[in-house]
Amino acid sequence: MSTAPTPKPTAIDALVARARAGDARVIAALPSGWVMFGERQFVYGYALLLPDPVVPDINSLGKPQRAQFLLDMTLVGDALLAATAALRINYAIFGNLEPALHAHIVPRYADEPPALRTQHPWAYDWSRAEVFDPRAYGDLAAALRRELARSGAR
Image (cartoon, rainbow, N blue to C red):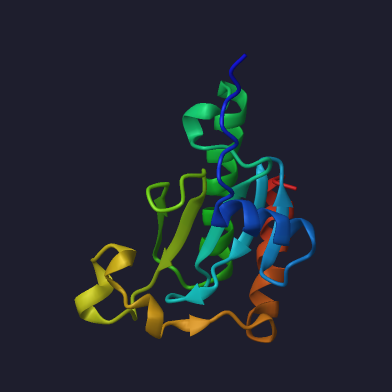
């Protein structure tokens, strides 16, 4: 009898475990999973949407779960637009480095450095970005929770 190998835990698995335990970066629990601030805030309000339970990719979800994940992702974007001075939101789902579904939700601002304003978010030097500080992001987290509650995402 053959058994499938146990998948190696990813950084996304660790983040979901931390979210379940009450990590300070958590903004809210949503129907599809958790939304939390990124560890490095290369732009104000950079967030991640993590599915719970963790799956390898969006194609591993059934149609209703896919729809919910994508809806939750865009509702977070709506909340960021309402709570910040963002001009637009960039969304990215890769899973190349961490082979587990997660979405990057990146607000973009008029006051970004001109050389980076129209570049993809990975053009930033993330190693030089501000490390998330829960005290500095408390007001934004509260505003995002209010916006998500208004949208019916919670």
